[in-house]
Image (cartoon, rainbow, N blue to C red; front, side):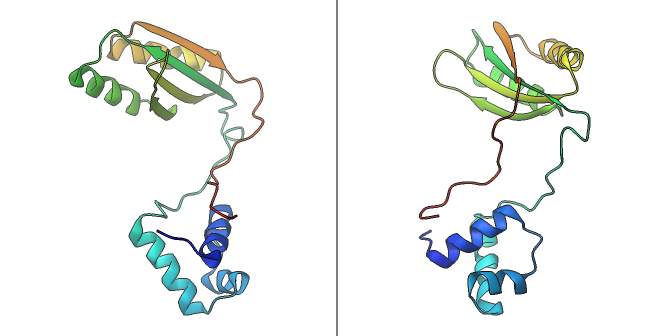
Length: 154
Protein backbone atom coordinates (compact mmCIF):
# COMPACT_ATOMS: atom_id res chain seq x y z
CA UNK A 1 0.00 0.00 0.00
CA UNK A 2 1.32 3.41 -0.92
CA UNK A 3 1.08 5.84 1.97
CA UNK A 4 0.45 9.57 1.53
CA UNK A 5 1.33 12.25 4.08
CA UNK A 6 -2.05 11.97 5.82
CA UNK A 7 -1.66 8.18 6.11
CA UNK A 8 1.79 8.56 7.63
CA UNK A 9 0.63 11.17 10.12
CA UNK A 10 -2.49 9.20 11.04
CA UNK A 11 -0.63 5.91 11.47
CA UNK A 12 2.06 7.65 13.54
CA UNK A 13 -0.57 9.03 15.90
CA UNK A 14 -2.38 5.68 16.11
CA UNK A 15 0.87 3.90 16.99
CA UNK A 16 1.33 6.26 19.93
CA UNK A 17 -2.28 6.33 21.18
CA UNK A 18 -5.02 4.27 19.57
CA UNK A 19 -7.56 5.42 22.17
CA UNK A 20 -8.01 8.85 20.56
CA UNK A 21 -11.42 9.52 19.08
CA UNK A 22 -11.85 9.63 15.32
CA UNK A 23 -12.89 13.26 15.75
CA UNK A 24 -9.56 14.09 17.46
CA UNK A 25 -7.60 12.13 14.86
CA UNK A 26 -9.35 13.88 11.96
CA UNK A 27 -8.59 17.27 13.46
CA UNK A 28 -4.92 16.38 14.11
CA UNK A 29 -4.40 15.06 10.57
CA UNK A 30 -6.51 17.68 8.78
CA UNK A 31 -9.12 15.30 7.37
CA UNK A 32 -12.89 15.24 7.55
CA UNK A 33 -14.38 12.88 10.10
CA UNK A 34 -15.64 10.51 7.37
CA UNK A 35 -12.34 10.51 5.44
CA UNK A 36 -10.41 9.73 8.63
CA UNK A 37 -12.81 6.93 9.60
CA UNK A 38 -12.58 5.41 6.08
CA UNK A 39 -8.77 5.40 6.24
CA UNK A 40 -8.74 3.67 9.61
CA UNK A 41 -11.30 1.12 8.36
CA UNK A 42 -9.08 0.57 5.30
CA UNK A 43 -6.01 0.01 7.55
CA UNK A 44 -7.99 -2.59 9.49
CA UNK A 45 -9.23 -4.36 6.35
CA UNK A 46 -5.75 -4.42 4.76
CA UNK A 47 -4.13 -5.76 7.93
CA UNK A 48 -1.98 -2.66 8.45
CA UNK A 49 -3.53 -2.42 11.90
CA UNK A 50 -3.12 -5.95 13.24
CA UNK A 51 -4.93 -5.43 16.54
CA UNK A 52 -5.56 -2.86 19.26
CA UNK A 53 -4.07 -3.66 22.64
CA UNK A 54 -3.18 -2.14 26.00
CA UNK A 55 0.56 -2.03 26.64
CA UNK A 56 1.21 -3.08 30.22
CA UNK A 57 4.15 -2.04 32.39
CA UNK A 58 6.25 -5.15 33.11
CA UNK A 59 7.83 -3.52 36.18
CA UNK A 60 4.40 -2.81 37.69
CA UNK A 61 3.52 -6.47 37.17
CA UNK A 62 6.69 -7.74 38.83
CA UNK A 63 8.33 -8.82 35.55
CA UNK A 64 11.47 -6.74 35.87
CA UNK A 65 13.91 -9.20 34.27
CA UNK A 66 14.32 -9.48 30.51
CA UNK A 67 16.11 -12.62 29.33
CA UNK A 68 17.28 -13.38 25.81
CA UNK A 69 17.56 -17.13 25.37
CA UNK A 70 19.71 -18.42 22.51
CA UNK A 71 18.98 -21.95 21.37
CA UNK A 72 21.07 -24.20 19.15
CA UNK A 73 19.73 -27.53 18.04
CA UNK A 74 21.02 -30.58 16.23
CA UNK A 75 17.49 -31.34 15.01
CA UNK A 76 15.95 -29.45 12.08
CA UNK A 77 12.95 -31.56 11.05
CA UNK A 78 9.44 -30.17 10.59
CA UNK A 79 8.20 -32.41 13.39
CA UNK A 80 10.83 -31.16 15.84
CA UNK A 81 10.13 -27.51 14.92
CA UNK A 82 6.40 -28.03 15.47
CA UNK A 83 7.08 -29.57 18.90
CA UNK A 84 9.54 -26.81 19.83
CA UNK A 85 7.22 -24.03 18.61
CA UNK A 86 4.34 -25.47 20.62
CA UNK A 87 6.57 -25.73 23.69
CA UNK A 88 7.62 -22.08 23.45
CA UNK A 89 4.07 -20.87 22.69
CA UNK A 90 2.84 -22.66 25.83
CA UNK A 91 5.18 -20.59 28.03
CA UNK A 92 3.51 -17.25 28.88
CA UNK A 93 6.84 -15.68 29.87
CA UNK A 94 8.02 -16.05 26.24
CA UNK A 95 7.00 -12.72 24.71
CA UNK A 96 8.98 -13.00 21.45
CA UNK A 97 10.30 -16.00 19.52
CA UNK A 98 12.41 -16.02 16.34
CA UNK A 99 14.09 -18.51 14.02
CA UNK A 100 17.51 -17.05 13.27
CA UNK A 101 20.21 -17.18 10.64
CA UNK A 102 23.79 -17.52 11.84
CA UNK A 103 25.32 -19.21 14.88
CA UNK A 104 22.09 -19.30 16.90
CA UNK A 105 19.10 -21.27 15.59
CA UNK A 106 16.38 -19.65 17.74
CA UNK A 107 16.08 -16.60 19.96
CA UNK A 108 13.46 -16.30 22.69
CA UNK A 109 12.75 -13.14 24.66
CA UNK A 110 11.34 -13.76 28.13
CA UNK A 111 9.87 -11.42 30.74
CA UNK A 112 10.26 -12.89 34.23
CA UNK A 113 10.41 -11.72 37.83
CA UNK A 114 13.99 -12.82 38.51
CA UNK A 115 16.65 -15.43 37.80
CA UNK A 116 14.79 -18.09 39.78
CA UNK A 117 11.72 -17.51 37.59
CA UNK A 118 13.93 -17.87 34.50
CA UNK A 119 15.24 -21.18 35.86
CA UNK A 120 11.66 -22.46 36.21
CA UNK A 121 10.92 -21.49 32.59
CA UNK A 122 14.17 -23.13 31.44
CA UNK A 123 13.24 -26.38 33.20
CA UNK A 124 9.76 -26.33 31.61
CA UNK A 125 11.28 -25.83 28.18
CA UNK A 126 13.89 -28.59 28.38
CA UNK A 127 11.26 -30.98 29.75
CA UNK A 128 9.16 -30.46 26.61
CA UNK A 129 11.78 -30.64 23.84
CA UNK A 130 15.36 -31.81 23.28
CA UNK A 131 17.83 -28.94 22.74
CA UNK A 132 21.54 -29.12 21.91
CA UNK A 133 22.59 -25.85 23.58
CA UNK A 134 20.75 -23.17 25.53
CA UNK A 135 22.32 -19.97 26.78
CA UNK A 136 20.77 -16.93 28.41
CA UNK A 137 21.70 -13.27 28.47
CA UNK A 138 20.09 -11.04 31.09
CA UNK A 139 19.39 -7.43 30.16
CA UNK A 140 20.99 -5.02 32.64
CA UNK A 141 19.11 -1.95 31.42
CA UNK A 142 16.42 -1.30 28.84
CA UNK A 143 17.74 1.62 26.81
CA UNK A 144 15.09 1.66 24.09
CA UNK A 145 11.87 -0.27 23.71
CA UNK A 146 9.10 0.72 21.36
CA UNK A 147 6.17 -0.82 19.57
CA UNK A 148 6.22 2.05 17.07
CA UNK A 149 7.31 1.04 13.56
CA UNK A 150 9.22 3.46 11.33
CA UNK A 151 7.01 4.84 8.59
CA UNK A 152 8.29 6.11 5.23
CA UNK A 153 8.75 9.85 5.28
CA UNK A 154 7.89 10.18 8.96
